[in-house]
Length: 351
Image (cartoon, rainbow, N blue to C red; front, side, top):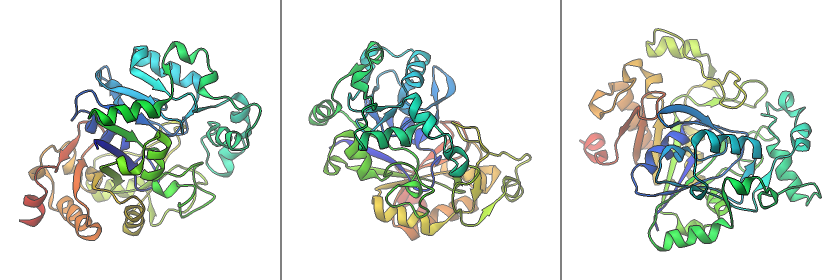
């Protein structure tokens, strides 16, 4: 059952896109399925350039990857078509489930007030999902979009995924946002997103059984973030300037959201939050991003021996407390700024 689900363990922006892109490179002709909608984005490399994608999967730059948008997706048709054109995707490379819901102008208008009251992106994502649940007469699905059919194969996705599983093609399901923002299980309702954000939910959005999944990668950050503004509780919040001082960086490197360009709030690592994410998602592997935020000397490291003692202590703590192996470790902003521990976990941590 060659299926991997990539899920966020905090409040989003953990580095899921990076992990999806790296995981896809391990396989020939993978199928990469994106869940979620235009209310979140990820950075990836397409045609040698870093770009932000809000609709397409992070493996868009891998020419042999088949890309798919699940039935649970929310689609802004204009944004999706622009991304298809930017990435120069052939029509046959992208499958869009006709039951994915489309964002309308009315949806964007309905969310205008939420931008200030709940730090919403105002993308219309939640309104589109609500309209679908209420069977609103103005709700449109991807199967209704004639223009979209010119750019993608609009056809039921689940049967295709089932066939791919049967013949041994590797599937990667790209989750969205993070466990702490789950509509059902997030700890700070109403400051959550508009759907569940667990691995099981993403599998079902795609049309595959959780029993088909044999790998779940939980992506976490050394310093978790939330979107700026009135976005809910964030334990042990601190400033980007404080991180700069503690890491030894020469300059402050604040982060901004991919979609709204708002300054992100940041906090110290919350072990209990990640422990809860592990309980709900049962990951087979952790991907830990941001070791360069602990110590700038970890920046761009590509081998375990290049990591500082503080970084190795942090990883050892995670392995001990969470009883979960560590795979990818992020050491910078670029996709390839990573250390892989997949082959050497025992030697590094148990020596």
